[in-house]
Length: 250
Ligand code: HEM
Image 1 (tube, protein in one colour):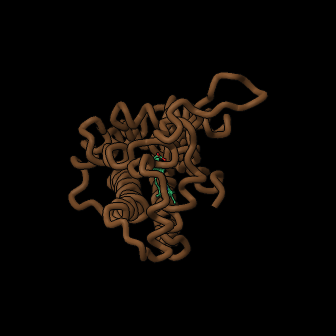
Image 2 (cartoon, helix red, strand yellow):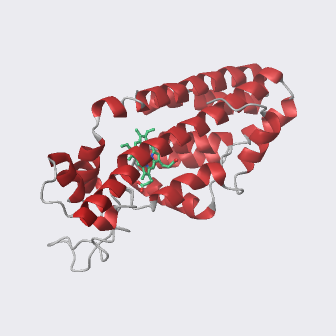
């Protein structure tokens, strides 16, 4: 689904907060929860359509860039453009604006290093998307509004949104593990064995650059980066979420 369709409830939330319309905010948050759930459901199709060994051994290499890539530590010289090498990150869903819009709306704060990486990824977004995220971050705080209103429906809608976002991210970590961590371990095993009779899947995996084993296509150190958002003590929203949610949804 196009960004605008998923994001169209964001201005409704912002306007509702401005006018003190807690019912409108709650309704829009309920829709956003549903959108995040739909994203998680679509995410599951990765397992149907993408083979982890093809992703790890082939696709990921083409998606990788020349920044924070140990295979190309100095970047890439663009002949005819400039003599000095340039560094650019590879394609990554971290450059997609939607989750960052939701983060800003819900008041999610990432641990400093992850936050800096995500902010840098905004430079790869269409400028209007980058501006939208910034605009959302400058609006009156939704989290404070939820606290002040003391409306059960609103409180629950907000909690659901945060829980759905956490569930999406924790599902994402499972996917990363299946598509990167597990094949990387398999590749290490194959290299150790140096078998003469590797099957084609094994060959594909073991040809992938060793230097990219623990790297995302955007150049992050995958598990240290991806695990921080849900485990970091620097996420005030997590504290708020824990205060107000008895049993988080999965
Ligand atoms: C084979 C499937 C996927 C793999 C292996 C994967 C891997 C990664 C990795 C390693 C990162 C860290 C940043 C980097 O270095 O690139 C990342 C970030 C991210 N990915 Fe994925 N990803 C996959 C699919 C998806 C899909 C389908 C979505 C859409 C919801 C998604 C959403 C994100 C987001 C939003 C981030 C930024 C971190 C965050 O906000 O939590 N990824 N991904």
